[in-house]
Image (cartoon, rainbow, N blue to C red; front, side):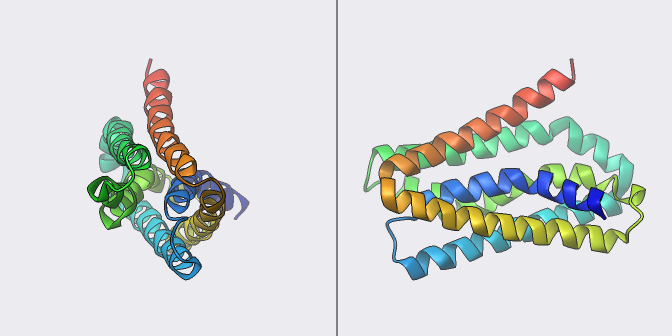
Length: 190
C-alpha cells in the first residue's frame, strides 16, 4: 500500500501546484467563495485523477503507449494557455475573458485534464500492485482531492496577501509546470 500512496502523491503534485495558482487568482473574493472554489477545484482534480487512472487501468497497455506518446504535448498546451490567460488577467485587471479562462470553469476543466493525463499512463501499471485496482484509483482520487484542496486554500491565503502578483506568479507557475512536463518527456525520449 505504501507504493500506491507514493504513486498517488506523485500524481497529485501537479494538481496541487495548479490549485495553488488558482487559489492565488481567487484571493480577492470573499472567504466563503475561496473555500468553495478550493473544494470545487479539489473535486475536479480528484475526479479527473481517479477517472483517468481507472481508464488507463481498464484500457490497458494498448492505450497506455499512445497516451505516453502525446501526454506531455497535451499537458504543456493546456497549462501554457491557462497560465498565459492567468498572467494576462493579472497584468490587465478588468479583462474578464482572460480571468474566466484562467480561473473559471473552463480553466478548471482544462487544468484538471492536463494534470491527470499522466494518471492514465500510470493506470496501466495498476495490475502490478497487490491491491484492488478500484482501491488504487480511489487512493489516487482522494489524494489529489486532499492535496488540491490544501493547495487552493494556501494559494488563496498567499493571493490575499500579495494580490495580482500572486495571480501572475500562479500563471507563471502553470506555464513552468507545462514546460517542465514537456522537457522531462523530451529528455527521457532521447
